[in-house]
Image 1 (cartoon, protein in one colour):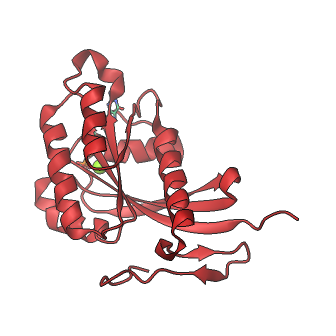
Image 2 (cartoon, helix red, strand yellow):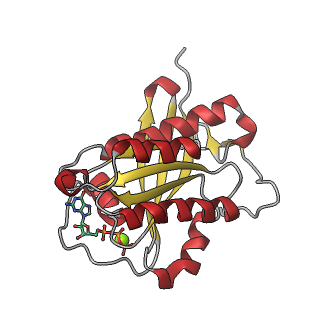
Length: 206
Ligand SMILES: Nc1nc2c(ncn2[C@@H]2O[C@H](COP(=O)(O)OP(=O)(O)OP(=O)(O)O)[C@@H](O)[C@H]2O)c(=O)[nH]1
Ligand SMILES: [Mg+2]
Protein backbone atom coordinates (compact mmCIF):
# COMPACT_ATOMS: atom_id res chain seq x y z
CA UNK A 1 0.00 0.00 0.00
CA UNK A 2 1.40 3.45 -0.89
CA UNK A 3 1.70 5.92 1.95
CA UNK A 4 -0.71 8.84 1.79
CA UNK A 5 0.88 12.17 0.90
CA UNK A 6 0.86 14.60 3.83
CA UNK A 7 0.41 18.30 3.19
CA UNK A 8 2.22 21.00 5.09
CA UNK A 9 2.18 24.76 4.69
CA UNK A 10 5.23 26.71 5.77
CA UNK A 11 5.34 30.45 6.18
CA UNK A 12 8.75 31.59 4.99
CA UNK A 13 9.53 35.28 5.48
CA UNK A 14 12.44 36.99 3.73
CA UNK A 15 14.11 39.81 5.60
CA UNK A 16 17.29 41.82 5.19
CA UNK A 17 18.44 45.28 4.30
CA UNK A 18 17.13 47.21 1.31
CA UNK A 19 18.63 46.15 -2.00
CA UNK A 20 20.14 42.83 -0.89
CA UNK A 21 18.01 41.01 -3.43
CA UNK A 22 15.04 39.52 -1.58
CA UNK A 23 12.44 40.22 -4.25
CA UNK A 24 14.81 39.17 -7.00
CA UNK A 25 15.52 35.88 -5.24
CA UNK A 26 11.80 35.15 -4.95
CA UNK A 27 11.17 36.07 -8.58
CA UNK A 28 13.93 33.76 -9.74
CA UNK A 29 12.54 30.90 -7.67
CA UNK A 30 8.90 31.38 -8.59
CA UNK A 31 9.06 32.68 -12.16
CA UNK A 32 12.62 32.03 -13.27
CA UNK A 33 13.10 35.72 -14.11
CA UNK A 34 15.76 38.30 -13.26
CA UNK A 35 15.22 42.05 -13.35
CA UNK A 36 18.44 44.10 -13.15
CA UNK A 37 16.32 47.13 -12.18
CA UNK A 38 14.00 45.59 -9.63
CA UNK A 39 12.27 48.48 -7.80
CA UNK A 40 12.29 48.64 -4.00
CA UNK A 41 9.48 46.79 -2.26
CA UNK A 42 7.08 49.14 -0.52
CA UNK A 43 4.88 46.63 1.27
CA UNK A 44 4.83 42.94 2.01
CA UNK A 45 2.94 40.13 0.39
CA UNK A 46 3.20 36.45 -0.32
CA UNK A 47 3.13 33.99 -3.17
CA UNK A 48 3.15 30.22 -2.92
CA UNK A 49 4.90 27.27 -4.47
CA UNK A 50 4.42 23.56 -3.86
CA UNK A 51 7.39 21.31 -3.34
CA UNK A 52 6.93 17.55 -3.33
CA UNK A 53 9.32 15.71 -1.04
CA UNK A 54 8.97 12.15 -2.28
CA UNK A 55 11.28 10.68 0.35
CA UNK A 56 9.30 12.25 3.16
CA UNK A 57 5.91 11.53 1.53
CA UNK A 58 5.00 15.18 1.90
CA UNK A 59 3.69 17.99 -0.26
CA UNK A 60 4.97 21.27 1.11
CA UNK A 61 3.28 24.53 0.22
CA UNK A 62 5.82 27.26 0.70
CA UNK A 63 4.10 30.52 1.50
CA UNK A 64 6.88 32.92 0.61
CA UNK A 65 6.61 36.40 2.08
CA UNK A 66 8.53 39.32 0.65
CA UNK A 67 9.19 42.33 2.87
CA UNK A 68 10.53 45.85 2.45
CA UNK A 69 14.08 46.35 3.66
CA UNK A 70 13.96 50.13 3.96
CA UNK A 71 14.25 51.41 7.52
CA UNK A 72 10.96 53.29 7.39
CA UNK A 73 9.07 49.98 6.98
CA UNK A 74 10.60 48.21 10.01
CA UNK A 75 7.44 48.21 12.07
CA UNK A 76 5.48 46.67 9.21
CA UNK A 77 8.03 43.92 8.61
CA UNK A 78 7.61 42.76 12.18
CA UNK A 79 3.99 41.90 11.41
CA UNK A 80 5.19 39.47 8.77
CA UNK A 81 7.86 37.56 10.62
CA UNK A 82 5.99 37.36 13.92
CA UNK A 83 4.17 34.22 12.79
CA UNK A 84 6.90 32.75 10.60
CA UNK A 85 8.03 29.16 10.73
CA UNK A 86 11.13 29.99 8.70
CA UNK A 87 12.93 33.29 8.43
CA UNK A 88 15.23 33.69 5.45
CA UNK A 89 17.75 36.37 6.38
CA UNK A 90 19.52 37.87 3.38
CA UNK A 91 22.70 39.86 3.07
CA UNK A 92 24.68 40.60 -0.07
CA UNK A 93 28.21 39.21 -0.23
CA UNK A 94 29.48 42.56 -1.53
CA UNK A 95 28.44 44.56 1.54
CA UNK A 96 29.75 44.34 5.10
CA UNK A 97 26.99 46.65 6.19
CA UNK A 98 24.32 44.24 5.01
CA UNK A 99 26.13 41.36 6.72
CA UNK A 100 26.31 43.22 10.04
CA UNK A 101 22.66 44.08 9.60
CA UNK A 102 21.83 40.38 9.13
CA UNK A 103 22.89 39.72 12.71
CA UNK A 104 20.73 42.60 13.93
CA UNK A 105 17.80 41.23 11.95
CA UNK A 106 18.24 37.81 13.52
CA UNK A 107 18.40 39.24 17.04
CA UNK A 108 15.30 41.29 16.39
CA UNK A 109 13.40 38.29 15.07
CA UNK A 110 14.52 36.08 17.95
CA UNK A 111 12.99 38.61 20.25
CA UNK A 112 9.62 38.73 18.55
CA UNK A 113 9.04 35.61 16.44
CA UNK A 114 7.88 32.20 17.72
CA UNK A 115 10.51 30.43 19.76
CA UNK A 116 10.53 27.53 17.31
CA UNK A 117 11.05 29.70 14.21
CA UNK A 118 14.04 28.49 12.22
CA UNK A 119 16.55 30.55 10.28
CA UNK A 120 18.18 30.26 6.91
CA UNK A 121 20.97 32.72 6.23
CA UNK A 122 21.56 33.58 2.62
CA UNK A 123 24.47 35.44 1.03
CA UNK A 124 23.10 36.87 -2.21
CA UNK A 125 24.71 38.08 -5.46
CA UNK A 126 27.40 35.40 -5.52
CA UNK A 127 27.99 36.22 -9.20
CA UNK A 128 29.71 39.41 -7.97
CA UNK A 129 32.56 37.40 -6.55
CA UNK A 130 35.19 39.88 -7.74
CA UNK A 131 33.64 42.49 -5.40
CA UNK A 132 33.18 40.06 -2.52
CA UNK A 133 33.53 41.53 0.99
CA UNK A 134 32.09 38.63 2.98
CA UNK A 135 33.86 35.32 2.70
CA UNK A 136 31.67 32.23 2.63
CA UNK A 137 33.20 30.97 5.87
CA UNK A 138 31.94 34.05 7.72
CA UNK A 139 28.42 33.44 6.51
CA UNK A 140 28.71 29.83 7.61
CA UNK A 141 29.96 30.86 11.05
CA UNK A 142 27.07 33.25 11.52
CA UNK A 143 24.67 30.47 10.59
CA UNK A 144 26.31 28.06 13.01
CA UNK A 145 26.04 30.59 15.80
CA UNK A 146 22.28 30.70 15.37
CA UNK A 147 21.82 27.02 14.52
CA UNK A 148 20.70 28.11 11.07
CA UNK A 149 21.09 26.72 7.59
CA UNK A 150 23.28 28.60 5.15
CA UNK A 151 23.59 29.11 1.42
CA UNK A 152 24.89 31.54 -1.16
CA UNK A 153 22.83 32.43 -4.19
CA UNK A 154 22.96 34.27 -7.45
CA UNK A 155 19.53 35.17 -8.71
CA UNK A 156 21.23 36.57 -11.77
CA UNK A 157 22.97 33.34 -12.72
CA UNK A 158 20.37 31.14 -11.05
CA UNK A 159 22.84 29.52 -8.70
CA UNK A 160 21.75 28.00 -5.41
CA UNK A 161 18.25 29.46 -5.52
CA UNK A 162 16.15 26.29 -5.70
CA UNK A 163 18.40 24.69 -3.11
CA UNK A 164 17.57 27.36 -0.51
CA UNK A 165 13.83 26.78 -0.70
CA UNK A 166 14.09 23.02 -1.01
CA UNK A 167 16.37 22.81 2.02
CA UNK A 168 13.92 24.91 4.00
CA UNK A 169 11.05 22.60 3.06
CA UNK A 170 13.05 19.51 3.91
CA UNK A 171 14.38 20.81 7.22
CA UNK A 172 10.93 21.86 8.35
CA UNK A 173 9.30 18.55 7.52
CA UNK A 174 12.10 16.63 9.21
CA UNK A 175 11.68 18.80 12.29
CA UNK A 176 7.95 18.25 12.59
CA UNK A 177 8.34 14.54 11.93
CA UNK A 178 10.70 14.38 14.91
CA UNK A 179 8.31 16.31 17.15
CA UNK A 180 4.82 16.25 15.62
CA UNK A 181 3.36 18.45 18.33
CA UNK A 182 5.14 21.39 16.67
CA UNK A 183 3.48 20.86 13.33
CA UNK A 184 1.24 23.47 11.81
CA UNK A 185 -1.58 22.63 9.43
CA UNK A 186 -0.59 19.15 8.39
CA UNK A 187 -3.32 17.76 6.18
CA UNK A 188 -3.98 14.42 4.63
CA UNK A 189 -4.16 14.04 0.86
CA UNK A 190 -7.92 14.48 1.12
CA UNK A 191 -7.42 17.88 2.69
CA UNK A 192 -8.55 16.94 6.17
CA UNK A 193 -6.56 18.53 8.93
CA UNK A 194 -5.12 15.84 11.14
CA UNK A 195 -2.81 17.87 13.32
CA UNK A 196 -2.66 21.53 14.14
CA UNK A 197 -0.40 23.39 16.43
CA UNK A 198 -1.74 26.02 18.76
CA UNK A 199 1.36 28.12 19.37
CA UNK A 200 2.36 28.62 22.95
CA UNK A 201 1.15 32.04 24.12
CA UNK A 202 0.92 33.29 20.55
CA UNK A 203 -2.06 34.02 18.39
CA UNK A 204 -2.51 31.88 15.29
CA UNK A 205 -2.02 33.73 12.01
CA UNK A 206 -4.27 31.38 10.05
N1 LIG B 1 24.40 40.92 -9.82
C1 LIG B 1 23.30 40.61 -9.12
N2 LIG B 1 22.38 41.54 -8.85
C2 LIG B 1 21.30 41.18 -8.14
C3 LIG B 1 21.09 39.85 -7.68
N3 LIG B 1 19.96 39.81 -6.99
C4 LIG B 1 19.46 41.06 -7.00
N4 LIG B 1 20.24 41.88 -7.70
C5 LIG B 1 19.99 43.30 -7.98
O1 LIG B 1 19.99 44.02 -6.74
C6 LIG B 1 19.04 45.07 -6.80
C7 LIG B 1 18.13 45.01 -5.59
O2 LIG B 1 17.38 43.80 -5.63
P1 LIG B 1 15.95 43.67 -4.92
O3 LIG B 1 15.49 42.29 -5.16
O4 LIG B 1 15.06 44.78 -5.31
O5 LIG B 1 16.37 43.89 -3.39
P2 LIG B 1 15.39 43.82 -2.13
O6 LIG B 1 16.15 43.14 -1.05
O7 LIG B 1 14.10 43.24 -2.53
O8 LIG B 1 15.24 45.36 -1.75
P3 LIG B 1 13.98 46.04 -0.96
O9 LIG B 1 12.74 45.64 -1.64
O10 LIG B 1 14.23 47.52 -1.05
O11 LIG B 1 14.07 45.57 0.45
C8 LIG B 1 18.28 44.93 -8.13
O12 LIG B 1 18.80 45.85 -9.04
C9 LIG B 1 18.61 43.52 -8.57
O13 LIG B 1 18.65 43.37 -9.96
C10 LIG B 1 22.09 38.87 -8.01
O14 LIG B 1 22.00 37.67 -7.69
N5 LIG B 1 23.17 39.31 -8.73
MG1 LIG C 1 12.21 43.98 -2.59
